Structures are given as C-alpha cells and as structure tokens.
Length: 360
Ligand SMILES: *Cc1c(COP(=O)(O)O)cnc(C)c1O
Image 1 (cartoon, rainbow, N blue to C red):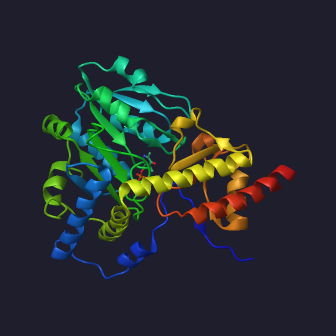
Image 2 (image 1 turned 45 degrees about the horizontal axis):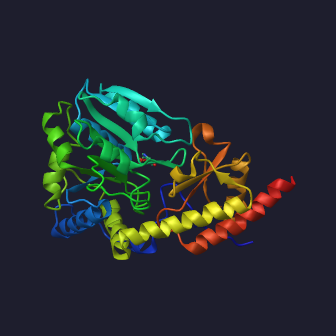
Image 3 (image 1 turned 120 degrees about the vertical axis):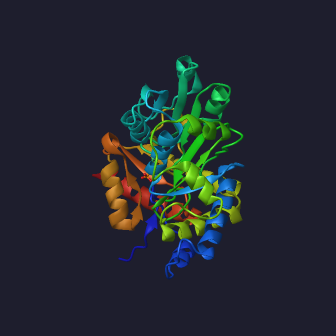
C-alpha cells in the first residue's frame, strides 16, 4: 500500500521545505546587491555555527574541494604532515596530500576505532607542519576528540586540519576554543544545504601559513575568496542556487540556536541506538564513547537486505555500509532535517524487518 518517504541520510541530507521554496526562483546575478546581501548573511551565520571570529569562506565545489584548498593554500611540497586514517574519507585526505607532494605519515586505526593525541604526539616534531584529523569518519561511524587534539597541538608548529564534513551542525564543534587551524565541511550534510558548495575557515596561524605556502593555487585561492567574501562577492560564478539554499538552511540552524540543534541530533541518535539495541542490533564503534551521533553506524550481518527492505516495504531510506563494510554494517543519518517522529517510524519498521529476517 502507500508509503511516505522518510530519509535518514548520511549525505546528501533532506532539504527542508523552506529551503526548497527559497531556491524556487529566477536566477540572480552574482555581482548584484541582492546576492551580496545573501552571501554576507550566510557567512555571518556560518561564523556562529563554526564558533569563530575568523572569516568563513564559501567555495563552489563539494567538501572535497575544500579539502584540496586547505592543502594547496597552507602547505608546500615536501612538508611533513601526519594523517590520522580511520576510514575512506580520512584516507582520501592522505592520498590528496601525497598527490601534492607532501610527506605523509599515516596513523592508521582499525575500522571502528579512533586515534587519540597519545597515538599521534610521539610523531610530532618541530618539522611537523600539519596534523590532519577527520572529526566524524562517515565510513566507520566514529567521532574524534578534536578538542583534545587542539589542546595537544596548540603550541606546536603544526596546523590542526579538521575534516568536519559530517560533524559540524550535528555534533559539538568549536573552531576557536578548540584551537582548530583549518576546518571545512560540505553544504549537503548536517548543514542541510543543496550539494554544490563547501565551507572553510582558517585560524590566524593557518592564514600565516598561507603566506609561505609554495603550492600553486588559482580556482581555490583562499586569500581572494576571503577578500572578496568580505564584500559578499566570489572570485568566480558561484553555485548561486546552492548558496541561496544554504543561506536558508543555515538561517534555520541559527534561529534554533546551534547548541539546540546539536542537542536535538544527540537525542535522535540516542533513540536510534537504544531502539536498535532492544531488537539486538549494536553499534559498530568499538568504544561507544566515540560512536558517531550524526552517521550512526551499526554492525549487522544481514545489513544489505535490512536496508533494501526498509526502503521497499516501508519507504525508509538509510544507508548501506561503505566500501568493504557494505555487507556487515548499515548507517542511519540523524543529522539535519530529521524529527523524532521520523525516528519513531524508522524504529517501528526496523523491528518488523528484523523479525522477518530472523524468521527466515
Ligand atoms: C561526505 C564526506 C566527505 C566528502 O564530501 P563531498 O562533499 O562528497 O566532497 C569528506 N569527508 C567526510 C567525513 C564526509 O562525510
């Protein structure tokens, strides 16, 4: 019979109706006053989400473009950097750094585990130019303690570069208080925007590093993005619709208050974890304290069939496990535009599907 779509996405996430309405309009010129006003409103609100006094730049391109911008703008070929590798996304950053000729030392953890500063600090010397840590590894569903990394690295020469693509807007993050030097995210995860833009913020220490970086930059030059961004401008034709959409969704976050949004997500995540535990499905993360609350990841030997039936029989979208974890895990996104009733519906259906699979 009839099914309504309920989407618990790991990204892109559901677009709120209000944002859809904002994007449903005729195009505007990106050098117009109207676009400048939208851009400036967006970047001011993003500062509240990042908890920073520094500029937040909006780039056209997905989160990976901001990852590339952070390497191009802050580092030079031959620089020694440390990359914490927890899964597919943190491995991407390590490979990208190698592509640019950086000298990468990987600290690799088994799937479902995080690294702590104790694992990393023994390798940090005065020649270490950067430590790259993924805030929330969306492939394995674990969250790193970025505050602890910031505390450990703040008085070293190394920049703390954080991929918070699936973190910011859903779980705690504080750019300035935590001494993060570079943080970037995509529009289409917890920020609830349409795909097509990335956001990035640099500390004073990172801006200083841009002055000595010798890697070439052009499209993703952050100094011109910052200088033009202060006027509500962008160097090139930006993803205008995605920016209009992101402005609306970030406005929603700021209206609710970023801390309330995080608390809401945390509550939804707890509902999912508890509800699935009751039917015998447990978190994949080895240490529950580090389990992701935005991309909740569970171990289940019938995961692909579970995901397929939820969609087919109940109209509920959750995500398969990533890469080699495809057949043994599934992922439930609670970040973004998700309500308690969405979770209740998911748990209702999950119980039915699990019972079906158990009986076979
Ligand atoms: C989604 C994701 C990315 C990649 O972002 P794109 O917008 O797809 O380029 C990078 N890192 C993490 C942790 C992610 O979840």
